[in-house]
Image (tube, rainbow, N blue to C red; front, side):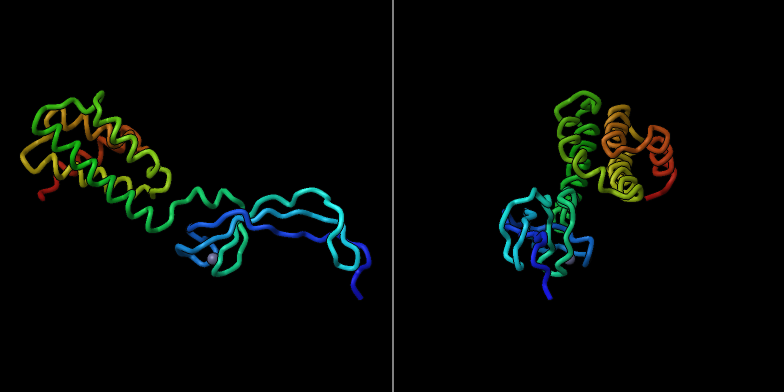
Length: 179
Ligand SMILES: [Zn+2]
């Protein structure tokens, strides 16, 4: 027997898109849905009784998440961010090596931050270290770090949220390792 009076939650879809689903582990479509509680008579929703909040529902596994799940980049987006990061670091290091551009206060530093800041919180420490080391190897290709190359790599380390000590340690390791 259904309850004569009860509270039903009705869901309305207000948007969709692509996200990384932590439930089934991949890039999936999602529906953004707003729920409303309503008093119901014989299962028929009648009076509004407040909101049940907004959820993000995976189209594949149907798991619902809080909307902050959308803060994580999709795998596709993450790969693109990573490619941009490696490319921008390479350009910054090359510019520092060729023209002696100071990496600590230039447009390139701003560009480094634009590319690395959104990426850094989603990188595992090994991922951040790898990007720095790729930059270090480019700087070392034509001999030891110049002061401007070193400053640029230090700026890369800061943008990647590596500590000053870790950055210096990694740069020293790269300089000792024959490429
Ligand atoms: Zn899913």
